[in-house]
Image (cartoon, rainbow, N blue to C red; front, top):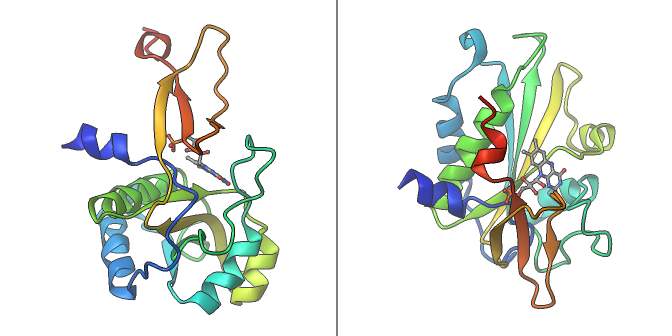
Length: 189
Ligand SMILES: Cc1cc2nc3c(=O)[nH]c(=O)nc-3n(C[C@H](O)[C@H](O)[C@H](O)COP(=O)(O)O)c2cc1C
């Protein structure tokens, strides 16, 4: 079960934009993050949810997509995310957020996969622009944006070759290939 979920939990960047995601669904996903581990149990993370086209269109221009796909500037209209969860760090709760947001993001994305959805963690964010359009108070640090939707692309895992190239790539049929290092290369002792 877990291996299957993790295998299916790829970074998806093209979606059936017309498939709506309900606010209730986003809340169920944040509930998974709420129940996840947090350093010193400080729970400093806060969330902004977006599942309406107008709000989504405010968020999208502030995100950078798939830097290794140099001839692709991100999903076109019709293939954009149906929803976003923005993960914020509340500096009034804690001054540092450790890896809490990574754990929260993984919980949310695994939950999304279980629901037949998928998404992508985005850390390349024009943070000040996003802060301005969403009127995010300075108290909150913008940590990650999770793009969510019903995936419209196939992503396959392959093994990093002898040249060690870890760059993902897209083939002529639009299939996205993600090289992963083999187990023997990552267990060093
Ligand atoms: C912390 C973090 C930040 C990421 N930021 C971006 C990003 O800004 N833009 C993007 O397109 N993908 C982003 N990704 C997705 C990675 O590119 C993706 O995880 C990687 O290519 C491996 O693919 P996989 O998730 O399908 O295993 C990010 C992933 C992580 C874990």
